[in-house]
Amino acid sequence: MTMISPAGELSALDLGNLELWKDGPPHEIFDLLRRDDPLHWSALADFEHEAGFWSVVRFEDIAAVGRDHETFSSERSIILVDKLSWDPAVPDPMDIAANMMITQDPPRHDRMKALVQRAFTPKRAVEHTERMREIINLVFDRALEAHPDGRIDLVNDVGVHVPAMVIGDMLGAPREDAARLVDWTNRTTAFEDPRLVPDLGEVWRALEEFIPYVNAMVTDREQHPTDDLTTAFIQAEVDGEHLSHEEVLMFFFLLMVAGNDSTRAVFTSGMKNLLEDPEQFELVRSGAVPLEQVVEEFVRYNPAFAYMRRTATRDTELAGKQVRKGDKLALWYVAGNRDESVFDDPHRFDVRRDPNPHQGFGGGGRHFCLGAGLARLELKLWLEETMRRFPDIALDGDGDRLASTFLNQYRSIPVALHG
Ligand code: HEM
Image 1 (cartoon, helix red, strand yellow):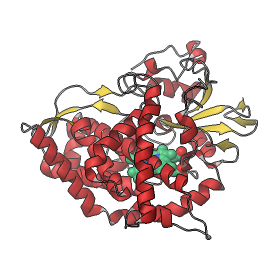
Image 2 (cartoon, rainbow, N blue to C red):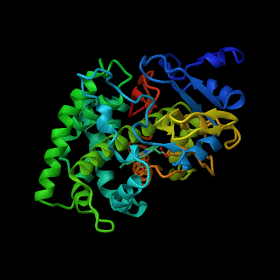
Image 3 (spheres, rainbow, N blue to C red):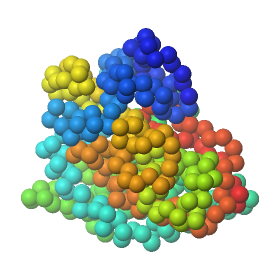
Image 4 (cartoon, protein in one colour):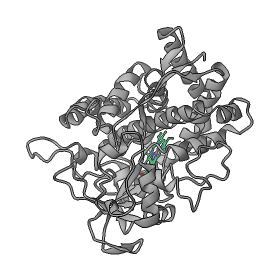
């Protein structure tokens, strides 16, 4: 973990500096900030054209900002940068991302969410149970086919495929396209990791392949409706209003990104925590703790998105400091989930934790995760099948983290499925 001296250095600390994130979220720093500087300014020096940002690190402040969408807007961007391209000659992917529901404020946000929410209730998620179970087993079978000795990479051989197939299936994309969909979403979200995105133009190149693919699918469903989610989005109606072609396209994109990165990040990191702690692993394997509860601790301990950003729409005060109109604020869910005023012994990974009112799906405002019900069920089934088929699963080497301040995930975790 990164060590810093509590006094003095805190004021110069730039939480946007990837060096601090090499071994995962800098929890020691967040502990200090919650105690000594609960609204901390960072320069975001790694992005020369971008303004700095405030870090919101206390559970209550994150919840308050998340709920107050009038003062703290989601428009334009939910990551720390406003633009990925400052060269007028190079198209900026952020101009496209700015059309997603997650980067809208009410009333447009609420109208879009109302149109799709019905497809994502926990009750509707249950309808996908058998299909999800089948996908999980198919992916494990394929991993074993490729590695008959059971020594696999939990992220690349299993993690990336399950959520992509689940959400891809729901949207109506053919299963054989799942790998391509994963590749496109990785290249758009992992923009801070030069191993995945060697230069920022890569994000645009990924979109140049992704957008025509989705466009063709949406056009096809407009002409030939099926029972998939893409068709449901086209047909959805609230007060006589429909989503436009572009809005359906952006939904497809948002769901691929939000549903993919997130669920695989939580499953793979949570499994790593379990396999590092024999006592916790036994609690899960023996069925001593309900899997629903295990899933909540997975999401609390390793929220898939380290933060979501808001932008102040007016001058205001927060945590005793003055925030100016236009200022960026990062709601650090990784810090809220370790707030000692809410969670006992917050740095302890404990599947017995109950209640567990974490902020891994958001702080509770209008943008609360649309896919939470689906993700909870998917993670539960994934754990269930893993424990049933591979009760001796064990770590088989060190993990390698993705370089990102936004995506809290591993790039690779070697495991031996048969122990
Ligand atoms: C464990 C897995 C997941 C985690 C940890 C997660 C986390 C989050 C978080 C933190 C937010 C933002 C909340 C805010 O800013 O207040 C969010 C929003 C969202 N998530 Fe998830 N998510 C997960 C799975 C999924 C899945 C499976 C889907 C889709 C099928 C999905 C779709 C969305 C959408 C569409 C939004 C935007 C909601 C809005 O703007 O109103 N998520 N998610």
